[in-house]
Every structure is written in structure tokens, then in C-alpha cells.
Amino acid sequence: MDISQKTLKTIEEKKIRPEAKWHFLLKDYSLWFFFVFSVILGALSVSAILFMVTDHDWDVYEYLDRSLFEHVFISMPYLWISILLFLMFFAYYDFEHTRQGYRYEIHKIILASVLISIIFGAVLFFGGVGQGIHEVFSRQVPFYNNLVYDKYDVWDNPQKGLLSGEITNVENENEFLLRDFKGNFWRIDKEESLECLDRCFDESLIQTGRQIKLIGQMGTDSIFFVKAIRPWYKK
Amino acid sequence: MPENETFLDKKDEELVKLTLRDKENYRYLMGRYEEKLMRYIIRLCGATREDAEDILQNVFIKTYQNLNDFDTSLKFSSWIYRIAHNETISFLRKSSSRPKTINSEAGSFLLNTLKADLNMEEAIDEKNTAEEINKTIKGLDGKYRDVLILKYMEDKDYREISDILKKPPGTVATLLKRAREQLKKEILKHGYLSKNVKNN
Image 1: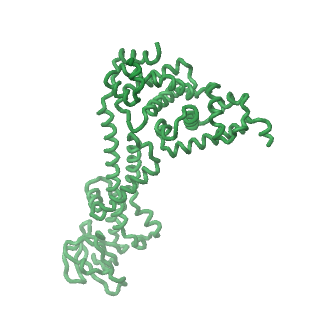
Image 2 (image 1 turned 120 degrees about the horizontal axis):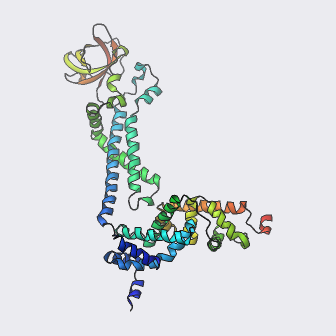
């Protein structure tokens, strides 16, 4: 008996059947679905990275007794970069396992998925999605704020000249009340004698209910002399 | 016209469709690949005829089970060679043995087809080299051995090798180039050359 005959006999005896086509289609479509899903999540990560990089105050390192290098090193959005790298690997894995994925070089697949994520990520960032993701995660995801650069922490340093919070009452353009994010009240005075760079004091930001960041000098009795005022979010 | 002959004229892809309708038609596909794949399996792992038959039977059963997964954008031969390759590697892993030397007939065949590509047309001493080449190929890294066998013994082109090994065509070209270089280096190192060439 030759091998063909033996094989047919085995097929007959063991009642072997070809697997249904939909099994294979399901597997292939699942891989494509997860590939697209990874790229979309990658785009969301890119939008969060772009938001965190552009919203960051890269110039306040001197107030925090750090060098610029230290400040940059500490402030990078490692969490989102790690998520992006993981998703890129996942996207590569999915694509490579599709029917004809093996025909493409690894660097081309990764480069293509990174480029797609960057382009869509940039679009989402300009649409405000990056900020939204960051805010939702800040509020809803436990430990998230411990894993990313903590803006609240940096801007809760009145002794070092950095303060933030919400304006509760505006007395005049040079004086207003602020409640910091811990709930303490501060009287904010514009101190003319303090050196102020060009356009650092944007009076239009002084509105009740507005969240702001302040650079200045702490006085006594919860008074803060301000020399620069910035919106809480740059955009 | 006898039934056999009608089937012999059919393309592999048509036979796949006919097999899905009636498994008896599978014998024509198997008949077409039985000898080729048997040779390939033996070349790849140097198994005994008995072991190679077991591997081949598994290949045919797996192929049958996965017929609905056959991607018509590639040749059926590439697809079944891929299954045969994977089954043979799996056999080697299970038996945890290194591939044995390929037989001397295969070695001689490989040597002849390789000579021009190695730019050693006149240089290789053919008298006892085929046997030595076998040993050299056995010593090569598996990925180099795979591409050499497919290219020079199975006469597959880059695209087919790419589909069989599931590697990008560019990678196949690189592997093949390196495999040739390594083989040439080994041939020179072990002195499988005619004396007059060695002295030059």
C-alpha cells in the first residue's frame, strides 16, 4: 500500500474532515481586527504623548532646583511611550501572522504602523483627544498620576515660587483670590517690583472660575506675589 | 478518456476544490507530490525512508485538514512544501536530533548546481567532494541549509522559498547569499579543491 492509499485509509478510519473555512476566516479577521485596534490605541497614545509634551512647562526647572536635563528626564511621558511601544509590537505580531504578513520586512511593518499612529495621533491631538485621555485617566485610573509627570505636584510649590489653583474672586486686575488644588485659599497680588518678562502677565486670564498656574514669590499670611500667570492648560 | 487522465490534466487548485467535494480525489494531489516531498523531507533531515514516510503521511493529513485555509494567492506546491517543512522541523525537534547528512547523490547534485553560483566552476575536486559537501552542509546553520536545499535541490525561486519558509523575499535573498558565502568559506577551509587551484 503506498502512502496516498495509507493516508486515505487513515482519513477514512479516523473520520478526519477539512476544517470549516469560517474557522480560518475568523482567525484571519481577528488578526486584522487586533492590528487595526492596536494602531488606533497607538494613535490615542500618541495624542496623549503630544498633549503631555506640549502642555509641559519645560522652563520651570530652575524653580525646582533641577538642571534642564534632569527636568526633561523626569518629565518624559514614559508610561505612554511604553504603552505605544507595546502596541506597536502587538500590531507587528498581528500583521505578521495574517496570511501574507510574512512577505513584509519587520522594519517596514513597524514603520508603517508607527507612521499611521503618529498621523492619526496628531489629528486626535489637535482635536483635543490627548488632553481628554489624560484628564480621564487622571481622575479614573488608580496610580495613573504616580506614573506620569505630576503637574499638580510641580505647581504646588509656593515656597519655590510655583502655585496653581482656581480663581474664586477677582477684586481688581492686580488682586484676586485663589483656591489651590488642595483647598487652601491664597490672596494673589501682582507685585510690580518683581521682574516680569514680556507678556508674562496676561490679565485676560484673571476671571472667576478659571484654573491657572502662577510663578512668583510666597509672602506671609497666605499672600502670593505673582510675576507670571499662565492658563492651567496651554491650549 | 480514462478518469485518471482527466484528473492528471487538472491544476492543483482545481484538485483542491474537487477534494473538498470528494475526499477520494485527494489521491491525485497526493500522487503528484508523494515523490517530490519524500525527497525533500529526506534531504532536509536525512531521515530513514520509514521515518520520512511517517512524516509525509502527517503532511498529507495536515494538508487535508487545512484545505480550506489554502491561500490561492500562492502556489499549492509552496503551501504543501511549507507544511512538509514544518512537519520535518517538528520531527527533528521531537526526536531532538540534528539533521543527518544528505545522501551522496543529493550532495553531488547540489554541488553541480552550486558551482557556478560559488564562482568555483573548475576549482572543486569532484572525486571525493560530494561526500564532504554533505558534511559541510550538515554543519551549516539550519536557516542556511533550508534555503540551499530549496534553491539548489528543489529548484524553487525566491518567491516560492519566501512562501515556503514564511520569510520576506528580501530576507530569503540575504540568507541565500550568506549561505553561499558560508558554504564557499567552508569548502576553502576544508581544502576540497583541486591541488593546482589551491596552489594558485
